[in-house]
Structure formats: C-alpha cells, structure tokens
Length: 442
Image 1 (cartoon, rainbow, N blue to C red):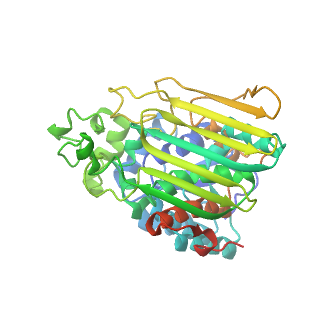
Image 2 (image 1 turned 90 degrees about the horizontal axis):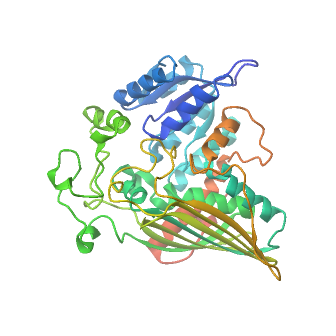
Image 3 (image 1 turned 135 degrees about the vertical axis):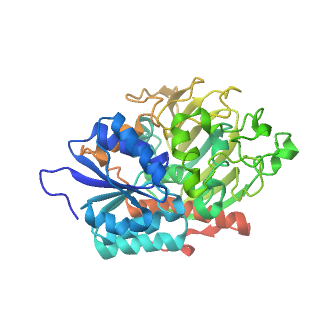
C-alpha cells in the first residue's frame, strides 16, 4: 500500500519493547504532519498497553493493538502503509516479508536479520514485491560520521589503504547485552551481528566498498561463568527479589526504573520473559571480546575490535591513505560510577540520553608534510546517538531531503550483516571466510 497524496503515511509498529520507544515518540510528537501511528503488534498485551498509556502522556489517543500472530490481519484492517519492525532480531524476517507481501514498505531496526537464509528470504521478497526495506542504521546520520564520509569522498587522505576501528562498550552498557535475550546467539546473532552491524555498515558507507573476506577470533572472556574466575559472580538467576543481587554492581533493578517496570517486570505474567538476568549466570552463547580482519572490494583492509566490558565507553576510527590519515575519537563516558553500574545507558530510552560521566569527540586530519588539522563538526550532540536519531527520523518519517542519500537499503543491511556472519563463521572454523560463500549478492 502507498499513502494517498496529501495524507500522512500510516505506520504500524511490531515489537513494543524499549527499542520501539524512540520511533513511536518521533512519529507522534515530531512528525505528525507526515506520519500517523495507527497500530501496535506484539506477543505481549501488557507491553502494548504501556505504550498506549505513554501515548496519552504525549497527548495522542491510544491505537489498536494486535497479537503478533494477527500481524497480517492488522496490516489489512488498519490500512498500513509502512511497517516498523522493532522485535527480537531473529523474528525480523517474518514481519519484514509479511509486510512487503501485504504491499507495505518496511523500516526495520538493525540488524536486518540474523542469518544468511533469512537474509536471502528478505532480498527475494524485495525483488518479488517491488517494495522498499530501509534498515535503521542511525549512525550514518551522526554529524561526525557524515563529516568523515565527506572528507574521505573529497580525497582528504587520498586513496584509502586501511581502517582501524575500535569500539568499547563499558561495563554498564556492555553488561546489558548479557542480561537479556541478546545473550542467546540464536536470537541475536551475537554482538558481531546485533551490535557490530552498525559499525560494519559505517565502514561500507565510508569506503563506498563491499566486504570480500573476513578472518576473526572471538571468545566469551568476562561475562557468563567467567565471572567466578574474575571474582564477580553472585549466586542468583535474575536480580528481582534476589538478596544475592543486592550488592552486585552488575544487577539491573527493574523496580527502580518506572518505564522498565511497565515494559518488563509487570509484563512477566504474560510471557515469562526476564529482562534482568545475572550477567554471570550460565547460558551465555555470545562473545564479549572480538577481533576482525576484513578485506574490501577496493583492496582496503579493516582491523576491528569490539570489547563489551571496558571501563569507559566510546570508539576510535583511524583511516590511513596515500595522502595522510584521518582520526576520529569519541568518548561517550569516561568511567562508570559504582552507583550507575547496574543502571542502563540512557535509562529506558534507546539512545535517548547521554551518559552522566563526561565525554566528547575530536576529528583530526593529519596530512603528509603538514601540521594536524582539528576539524570542527557542527550539530554533534551527546544525546540520541550524537544527534543521529532525530536526523534519521526527519528523513524516514518527515520527508526531509537527504543530500547524502543515507537511507540504508535491504542490500546495505545484507552487506553489514554478512561481515558479522563471516566473523562468526571464522570464530567457529579458525579460518578466513569469503563473504560470497555465505550469500552471493547481485
């Protein structure tokens, strides 16, 4: 279905956990003139009821709710134009394909999906239906990343030879992936897929290149049952009502966060999902320390490292070229205070707030034969992924023209996913993996 000229596009959201909140808020508060939220779908009615109550706080009437099994019927009955997919990663393909086949366009949270067969299913559906899938790679809209892209495209470092990319998740943010469904690789694809797909997409975009081969090593070093060896383990399964969690800085106390209480603690009676698992409990099947060496279609290489248990949060990008070097360093939090260790980055809002413990960013061009040049970047903020969330939703929902054409397609989503999938395969085999052996893109 396509919106009728002169009326707002009709949006439905499937998956009403915390990831949906930024999108819902943008639809009803910031872009009501061009977008209309008309329905919610989830497996849990209590979570949908929480979102409807929050809509009331924004002055918006409640919208119809549907169990996820009635997703196709919802699309027809509510005359949906665009589906927003913010469900558990492994379910993305189910809703993306159903939305496309119903004649809708789709915006999906990253990662687009979690494995090669599901990815192929989405790509086939895009070709078959002629509809559009957009992957919400919001980091493309960060002013720092935009400026880095411009400088590289203008030849500031000449021909690009290599990229080094280090991403650090601190012991507040990193720990949270080990409390929830992300700890199960079958649900999330692991951090190489769920988290690093953001970063792999940026490198594809910056280099205007595609990944060819990936060699990687990763392990679970800090979380899971390693906590006993490192002296952090506590004997409880989930934090709520567990005395052993009282002195655990890694414990998430759902009852102390009103939004999280409504979305998860109060909703447990519907589906039994526990949002506050012990990060050092058994059953973790994802890695927390990962190193990647990738080669690209241009001949450039990338070395990448993701650490999920760092004392500070941020990232470093270094691009080496035939005329110099470009360096980006971002500090999102300089440290994690003991009082904040068991909380969430940005509370219940996905990327909605900056961490409390300092930070900043520098972008430096180091040309040959000249002093380094500090590049000032307008528009960068420590809120909402560097200001990227608001910039992205203006393009996706507000119809604002984007001169950089950053809306990531299904093919872009596949390319970012394939780097992570190849890394996971290399973890298992100990050998380099050719991306085309996982899935051949046209």
